[in-house]
Length: 134
Length: 174
Image 1: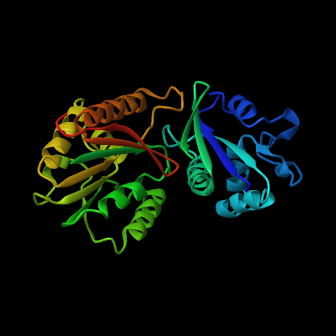
Image 2: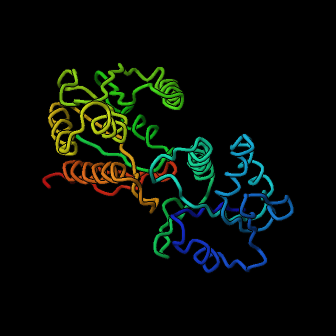
């Protein structure tokens, strides 16, 4: 049975390192969107998707449906494990800029959507992973 | 019973609160603290209204002076959200310096008389950005309110994308 593993936490808390060690991920298995959040379909098939929040940013800027983006990624991994890593960006002041507000809220929505479907959810803080759903 | 629920933006706090409340019998009140000033606020209000539909809440709009909220004793109350209440107390009307104390006293006074009260609050101090003085004051006030209410609460929960992390749970006799 393939597993959906969702790793969240603030920026620079050691999420990727945790994932690499815990789930035996090589650098070649990591899909990384560019700074604008663009990533091609082939990359998305890799076992580990890092900075998923940037993919949500890209989708938000293009007013794309967030649940469709999530479903699409999960569908690409039917039959294989996937590790999705996302920065938690929703615990600050509400941004002045509309696009930043939409992005921030969509990251929350995407997080809830993925967490609900995930087999394992881990929150990483200071390099320590805490499984909050298993 | 007093429960504090915190978490980031769109992290599933409201749904969690409503699910807890649905297990309680009694007259249910929803204290809405968000003033429908902006398009964003209107959208959020209508989204939350839709979510509450059919769940038996009577909505009471109270943007500030929470101690004056007209709620009968022994009710089941959900207040949403502390971030707005704090902002309203600070920025709408005359500036006050004792906002945190005023709010905490008001909430305690109200919660003491209820069968269950849940307050949904927000985490706003974790983006590491230094803002203008009044925003920093807001972050400080909300942090102080959260800490004070947490001390008083029977249960404190952080919602992480809909997953409840119980930060505090009072056991009988404690």
